[in-house]
Image (cartoon, rainbow, N blue to C red; front, top):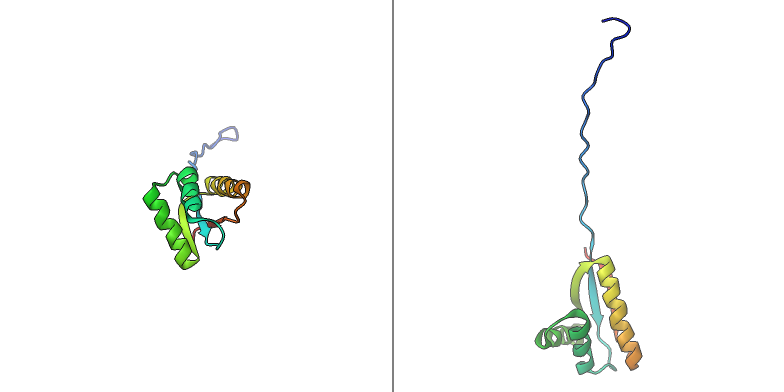
Length: 103
């Protein structure tokens, strides 16, 4: 090889590995003040549940202290929690929802 020769190296391909977004679970907590019918109404309106499914989720929270409502992406979970809490606050009830990372 002479001084002017250039060695060409093959290009390496970089594969990006994308992680799936972490999922968050929305929890409903039982309280002794919010009427059951109101809780079911919130579950139907905000979380698009049927009346029967909403009733089962509400009863699980009533008996166990809390219940998982839905598991979804973080931004969706936080939006649903805020929307449900806003409805409850507007109606004067202490209904409590939270969004926590799924383990």
